[in-house]
Length: 386
Image (cartoon, rainbow, N blue to C red; front, side, top):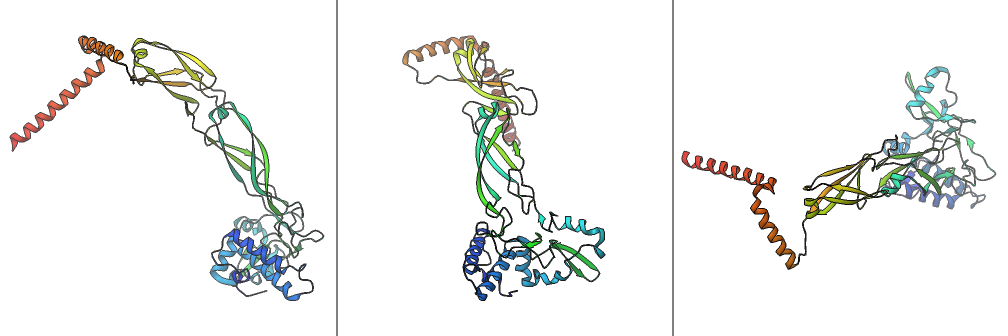
């Protein structure tokens, strides 16, 4: 057909995005459509040129070939005469080349059916929702079968026509010397048919952008990074092909009290130093309510208590994790004069007891003293050698 530059036909730059390319095609197609220009041969020719240009530039592989080789890279005449029939000299290699070049399977009439794309939806959950399970509604944008044309891509009252380049097979064979290669038809892009009168709603694609609401059941125990597969809820297939799948990716929001590692939960429990020294019973929060934890006397910062069975039930088994509660001894603040006086008396009483009240502090002090003595001896030795 036309040998004019495809980018010039659509009035776009060479670096045009896919979205802008589609907008330009729709604008030009509506301008030159035969229904708007009856008995206008020039407009009909322009419409065919616009359609041809878009068919090439909207296909990433064909566009790359066109950008590199020009019209020679996508000229259907290279294989048009040999498109009919895959038997003969090609024999049993048809399926092999079909797999290599990504061809689909014919679904009657020569049209090739393609599976729809898989989609991913990122879903944020609270820790409680993830641990106990829930049901949520999500709205997912995707390409769905066009209701106007029923997925054919053709205007009501018309039908797609068999591609004359490949005779409806969706594949053409290129002969180069003794070697022949079968590849997707550059004219119909493997569908086996062409649409001369496209649907006004989907512009010949057979699919339109829609948003659908889906109910997703979240099982107990899902974790950050888990995926839930909704079969057949992805994008609609092409030419009757099966729909893709939707994968719901789980993301857990940060919790105020707990962090999760596998099936275990972790929390930090601040207590007063008097509680740590004297011991006592604490109320510890869990995801199912408060439980009592007995803290023994002389508990130190960093001590971890394990509350068995208070974690998360695994989504893959019946195993239940634990809650690990880490003690953090808090230094009192905003003391009154009386409180300070009492602490001073308490400190004096501790000092009289020596290291038996603060064994870690005295042990650390002894190690520090030995360290400084070793350093001093090293420096003295260096001075003597000089």
